[in-house]
Length: 218
Image 1 (cartoon, rainbow, N blue to C red):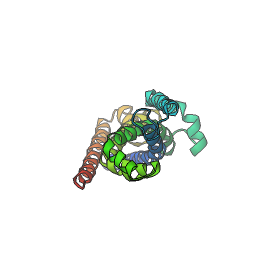
Image 2 (cartoon, rainbow, N blue to C red):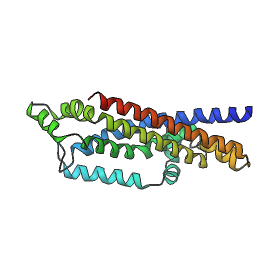
Image 3 (cartoon, rainbow, N blue to C red):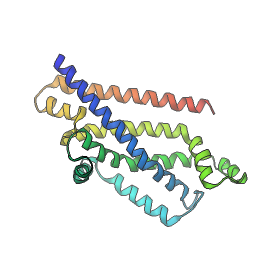
Image 4 (tube, rainbow, N blue to C red):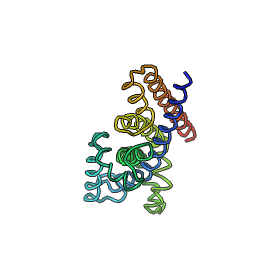
């Protein structure tokens, strides 16, 4: 029993490190891209740029269409360049971040497009610049939806990190496969799955609470 607790505890910390680091980096990559997709939209954007919007949209769609396992294998060389290795917890953060970035971009774009156009028009009428509209109108107004989207991203990354365990990514997925499935330790595999389910539930609960709180303050 003590061995199981030690193994699951260590793997849980690895999963949390992977998920929250990749969430941060995917937001750094995806947030500006999502804003660009929204503001350059040829129909509803505050700075319509059809060509740029189409190019960015195609890039996002292509990256989103890659199955994560294949993308992770393709990014082995990049992981090796950035962190010096292509396997393990730290190396997995690179493909996780790149895989989640286009997903984050679409979530940001969708959330910003849900903002009432009347609020944007009012800001324009008061002489606000495009940057002021983005920073002081679009992002604050979309914040409850953005929090829900980020929560969904974290949950998806937990699933991705579990898949990464199949090819040496570390964390709970790796524990379930190497110690549970391959060594016929059903107890370890079940423990890893239970922890993943608990993580998802806790993150969803926290995300829902924060989003509801932001909505209540409006």
